[in-house]
Length: 228
Image (cartoon, rainbow, N blue to C red; front, side, top):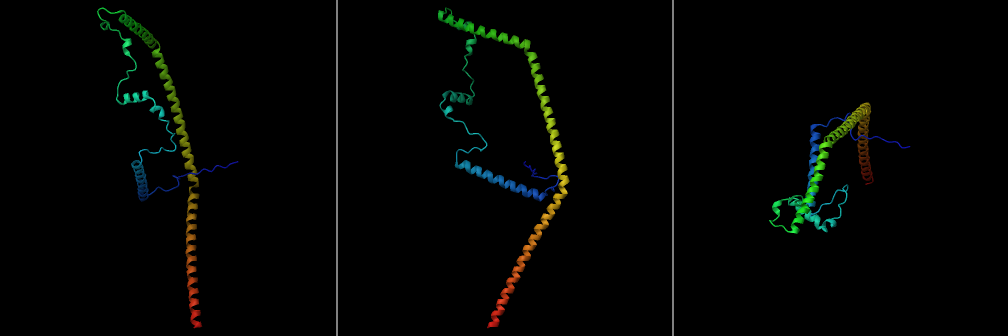
């Protein structure tokens, strides 16, 4: 059976607020770090024409498909030039008697008749679609609005539940930190006193070592003087 330990990275209800000097020092460190990162990025950009992607990003797809596809290249060139799409011939849906000469040939009449059939089929389908839209469009629009309202209400309920959970978590966090605040302050004071005593002990040991070394040197000097 495992034991899960909850670790809070910050204790806002226990720790003291940083002073203005501490905030200034922290902001200075942040600014210096950002400046160093920007300098590194500028150096990498100046030394290399391509920058490496972040490890969390998926790898780029193979560009050979685009390079070997002239249609994609032409389409991109059209989009960059902001030209209209001309892949669909709209003239097949248009009939103009002025296009026919005074004495049309059989081929010209057949072509005009073919365009007339195409335009008639298109207009018939368009008329049917407009009729369906006029008959059922309003209801479809109302149903779509009803579905959107239902989805919005569901999202609002989820948002309210999430806010309530956040409030409960913050309340429990504050209560827990308030209960253990005094204990944490006592432990912090005990730790500081312990560190201070360790330093005092080290200073006393160093001073004692220094005294012993001085007495040893004095004893050796006095013994040498007596022998002489």
